[in-house]
Length: 637
Image 1: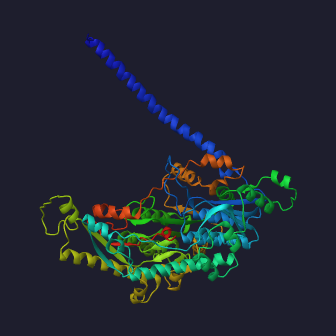
Image 2: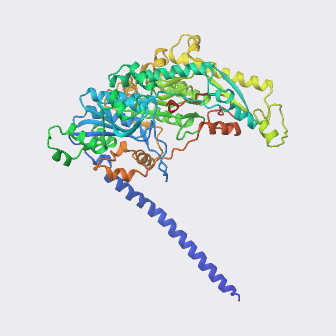
Image 3: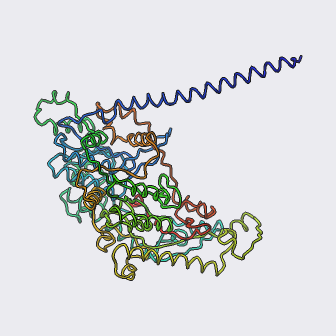
């Protein structure tokens, strides 16, 4: 049976009108409902915002190190997995300093929950905590697992406590290298290397089976410098000699809480409820009755609360800009983990034109990247410094291109454990002819106007002229790098820089000795130095760049950052338990891949698409010029 034409028409019109009406309703709900939803969300979170809380007398600042300690958190993302929160280092440092100066704060408690941080970040935390202790306020550290880095930070505390059955590892520092030369040979891929600097070791995993003598020398020296600083602090806190600590670690004699207690590294093994009682005893010294003490609450203060309290009292109209350069340096727009020259230039010009900004600190946490992008950023910093003071503050790593841009500042700070230097250049192309032709049985043909039009194609070898041209370009960039360092750092001759270069990495303390940096210190000292140069005294505000696009985006970033327990409070405290659970699901999606995977991707991906450590385009079809060092602070473990 069939329907009439008019029936089909009426049915179509009914369906069309229903769909149209449904679409209009859906759009209306989006327009009205989404703002209402986020308005309710903002109101809910605003009710518990830091600004609505007050700092009471006999309060305790809680610092929960339970995520990745960074200079600038990556963009907010919702994730259904239990990803780690990101903790902005400078906010924590400012809160610790404020606690030291605030009479309402009785002490500071630091809880370690498997944090990820570089050694320079650890140095900064140690210094600020030690200053609190020097101010005659208690500093306690607590953890259920600790390693060398945690013990280094905790050595600034009055006492260190651990869960009685906690995991403990004190066996020294190491850097592991994975070599993929044999793998590349098996799959028919040949790396073609160009470099200047015998210490520029980033390409060694592609062409060798073990570390070169030069790389082994520089890494051993770097480890010795970093461990020398940590060893002094850790052994001093335990009232032992550095030699005693080394001997105990070499023989694996500190492997439990009881071992650490006997050695003097840990005061006592305590469960969290016992820890809470101990803190109450330290705060409410006048209360002797245990039942009365048990019923009392600890006035925990979080980082956001304390910083909001500081901000509400500051009336200055002058600002110091902190420009964060964190990640690999690239051409184009930046992103999380990427320092784009276009994004940096936009921020620097905004800083230059903002009359409320008196000076700028460029905070560098970068292993380097594109040589061209580094040169562009260096130039813009140098030009800005003629109008407003520019200070560089090195974080965990400011090597290769990271050092290049630091040279644009009039004054450079580094932590003693910062990884820096690596003044060298390398490039790499991959000849995948064996893989593509022999193993994959692919055939190639071409037409061209000039003999080198397909220069760099992965399906053929470079000829002698092309090889010579690339090496010449790498050497030219290296000469430019030396000139920039000599000019910016006040060396009379380029020859004075050459022995410090060759791609060699240095610790911050060594770089200071070699006059590659001006002072040992963290971001706080760099900011104060910038204010000193600008003549604005101490009553200034801090403004971060590059700015996130709008207010709501910045709110989401802050919400993501506040998912850390450092921002909410100890999970074992009754007064903060609910908030901790409420924020626990908000995380940032960090992602990541293994070093071996990056090598393989680099071997099999067209070079102008690479995002690994191998190569970056500095201009169209020129992939070889790099000033980057692959050594990550996290690799030292």
